[in-house]
Image (cartoon, rainbow, N blue to C red; front, top):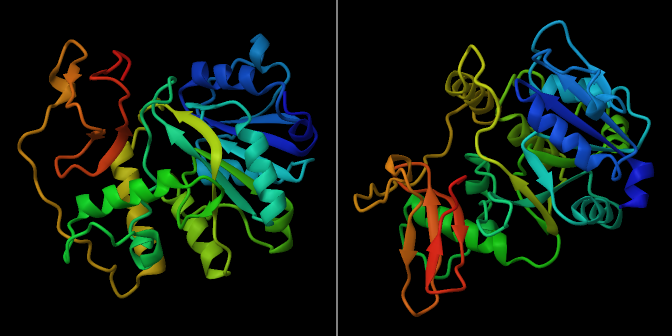
Length: 321
């Protein structure tokens, strides 16, 4: 139990078609935060359920999007800090305490954890892509071991290594909106909404970090804070996630790169990939004797999506993964 956070932090969860995940998250937060607000964008929360009886549920007349939902919750806060959460996120031990400590000690208005893909915390998720903000910060890309003209996959792997080697809170150009701790008092003093509501879904977190950096404020990733982010648990909206992402990307690029974005490096298309989606049984991989790691990607050009460092001579994928 985190007694300090109980008095200082309100959790805000945006629900859209995944009330079971929302209920599970609420039950795990009840001893950690002062209050929990659910913004029910799909109107499928039954407030008579025991899990929701101690929460505040806001049900807009229609789906107002992720950013607008969080801004709505922020207007009714009684605490200084707002913990922004997706329903499919699970905080690990002392995650919130580490985020709150970092925000206080570093005077950081925005902090986030590092994410794992699985409950066992064996598969590390990479830093948020934030295309193309991270390309503008050379210090976030270690140059050792990279060829003169690295491709996109090599750069992604270099960022992953740098991201996961940190031991203390560190600056990071983009944080994932799946779990953020925002100092709402700071945002109010700046007369700055947490999210730009022009972004209905996707890129609102990238834009938030971009707006902070324009003010000379760098988002902070807290190395000690761990959270699990499950894969693709939210319901498909009528517009489709792909269409909403494309729409938000266009808004983002017009806002930050009116003359056109910097070109991304080329990425190599690989042919010797194991497609997990075509398997009926989770595979077991035999590993070499020397130290190695396992990368999982979700695109053919193999941008790292998750990485594991096995501690045995074989690695088993769980059936849930």
